[in-house]
Image 1 (spheres, rainbow, N blue to C red):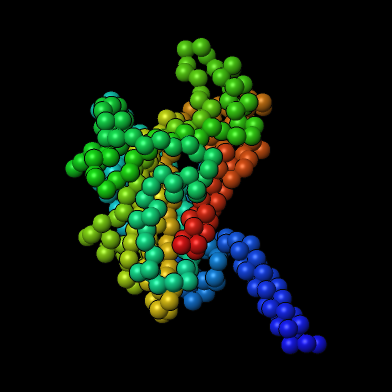
Image 2 (image 1 turned 90 degrees about the vertical axis):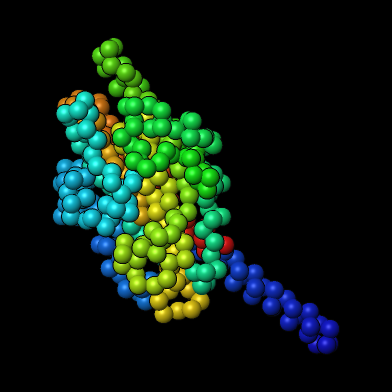
Amino acid sequence: MSIDAMRRHHAAVLIAACVATCTGAAAQEFQVEDVPAATSVPIAQIKPRTVIFADQRNDKLADSSTGLMPFDDWARSRPVQRRFLSLFPSFVEPTLNQQTKLKLSVYQAEARFRLPRPAAALDLSRYANVAFLEQIDPAVKHRPITAGDAVPDKDTGAALNRPPDRRWCEDAKAICVQSRYMFEGKIPAGIQLANKLREESKKPIPDFIEFQSEIMLVAQPHLAELPSLTGLDSTVTGGLEQNIFWVNQVIQFGKLLAVLQQHPTEREAAIATVYIVIAVRNDVLNKQREHSKTPILRNLVPAQLLMGNSSFNSGDSLSAGLPKYARSRIKAIAEMMERE
């Protein structure tokens, strides 16, 4: 074989090896590994491109019939989580008509994953925008809003979802959006049927979820306090939160919090911890349990739909139920951060 032929052969081997290696790496997605508690898994045991995921369905506080935790029990027994993962630290179950307390139930998911670069090299500010929301769930459509559009800022009926010291969307560093998700699969047809069977005096059940939220970076001094939530004793370099402060049905509020910390033993690695909390109205859950008595509507019982236990659940977005939705959303966040 001539020298030129040997060079061409060597180059072809290198190219083939690179294509095989690079294609395999690009194709490899994050895997989601279910564990009893994400924060209890030793950092050294978190494998690359693996999301350690846990939610509360089997927690001792969870209601066996719904898989959700009563808000009061959650807030009382887990004050640190209540402080950081409620809509705002002083949030309590709202009192309606000066006498009736609106009881809530909580779905909470927590996840953790490793990133192959120093935490200081990762910039969470690039995710504080609408593009970030569009990428983690393309099925939800968003449009920017201002403080004048925020429902709790102008509607007295929703004012209990407003922080005591400020109005939503007034912070110059905050991005606020109104979002809409049209239910997928069999759910719209089921809702249409349920509306036909409802009394004419009752408002029809919407076939969509519409919500308003504020996205911003966590600022000091709260940023430095986040290790008390994550249980990881290392430097926090960033925090990103999305507060869902108004929803058109079923849900009272929602929260996503992502915390970025330096890996405690590896200089070239970071650890991300992500929380998702959804607070659901018990009056809706209880009132619509009547669906379970009607065979044709049994798959529309809200608790079953929310927890992904209905044959009507489908896809990866909200129609899939909160557990699958939380997994897919956190997995999308991990893959975005990995590509940074």
